[in-house]
Image (tube, rainbow, N blue to C red):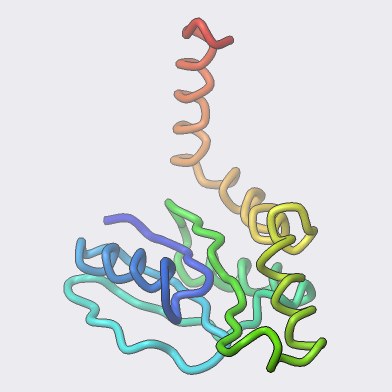
Length: 146
């Protein structure tokens, strides 16, 4: 059984990943901004944390809470995004600014690095993560790619 930390499980890719993990009997700790989705837990376990992952001040706190709940997390999926339903011409400047700030620049923004940055210290303390990283490093060094 694996333990997953998935941001943004309300819908879309995050919801699909959470459903698949739960169907396999895995444990999922997921974040939502609003109402939690109805998920069939199957043989898995589900914990939902309420957090707006676009709020940089909340990210480290939520990551810490997830690791505290689980003890060990095997997979971190940084998936949270922002959706805006409606025509661009009907949207306010504030709505469009928020949409593009989160979705278009997430790859290069400090917000996108906040979840991995907050997760890495916890992962490094986990022996299983260290041994996996060590095995991957060994394989990489022994390959022709090094």
